[in-house]
Length: 188
Image (cartoon, rainbow, N blue to C red; front, side, top):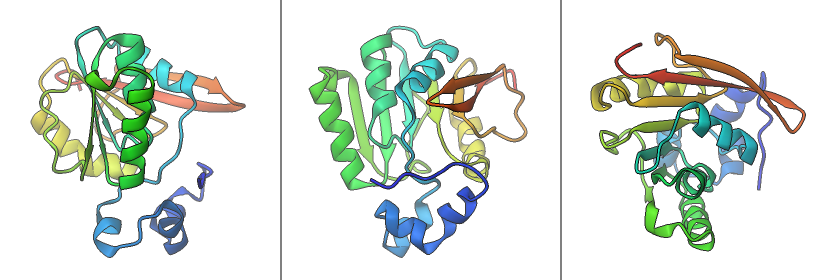
């Protein structure tokens, strides 16, 4: 698995040919849809994101660009939520489904192989993002259109420009500081 170093080179890694090859996204059609590289988030960060978003039992959490499904599994297992992930990569979809099965939460986790820009997010109480700011910019009108008032959006490291966060927290894990932004629809 290829790990990106989040820093000054992320835009280059996202757009560069070698970055696409490393993520397995080789076809021009999929490259046009890919909004961010796959980067694993530490489990402690995942859980803190869900805590800050105040996920409650029975709520529905969407993870757009769900990667290996760790947010989905944590939402279902620790917070007793329903979880829906959207991921382009077929291999990551398989991994996410397998992990949900292994952790005993497959009945509460759905993983959709597809483009996050075309999946209806209206049922979400919480949407989790780990995309670059430019990708959040592309996603913002969709979220504003489809999410109901009171729904929360939690974004790791990259803000949603034009929105005022309800909470911002610096969180340290694995010798790195992460920034978690929480937004609430209807109070942006």
